[in-house]
Length: 300
Figure 1 (cartoon, rainbow, N blue to C red):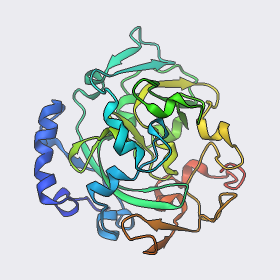
Figure 2: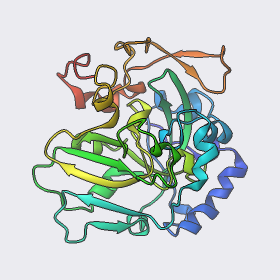
Figure 3: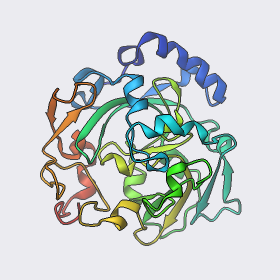
Figure 4: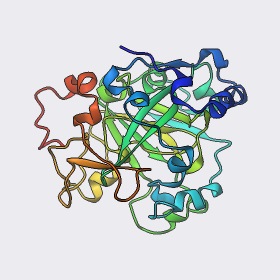
């Protein structure tokens, strides 16, 4: 196992700016920034170059602001992210609504370099910062028979222009099994490239599940529910033939309208590099046991 060094994966000017970001959040000292151990095969800082901050923040799927990849960067500034509250369902605590400062307080901020693989066939490598989802879940008293975790994006059509149209059944919703949610790779991102998370990338909190297609990594989370039954998820409900509940990256299971065997790397140009798609986005060793005995073509 190899530890990622921040100075190896992040441009120096942005790396140094991380200290101011952490101080401003009041979460932890810069010295508490730690890296998640990953196998050499998944050290994307060594395996491939990082995408630039400009690429990451200007090429997004966030239908709440429009269906074009450039719409989020153009319109997301309208979203109010402070104050921000998270509501929880399926917990036994009397208090079920928390301010974001309560969610973040005391959590050591980590940097994780994950490849984001989109179901449309493109990918980019992003240095996220945040904390593992299980650190939040472990603070909650769940109902004993919880099997799934569901997430809702904020619904504010007055600030999110895309929600004024029936493009999808708003609010956007996603879900994981409880085993997926507590896996140490599952991450809550609060920033990227050492900066506060941009609004077009899902501020103030977004989910990052690196072995799944990007639409599972729901943005601007305002509600987390712990459930007994498999939850409603937006794209699976919209078109179950094309978007499964699990949505694990799998080169052997094509989208009905295109192959998933390869992916276009953002930043390499329209006719630039295409790389072979890896099963579970390369995390087969880490997450393969979650799906042992599961028919991956049936439960895609």
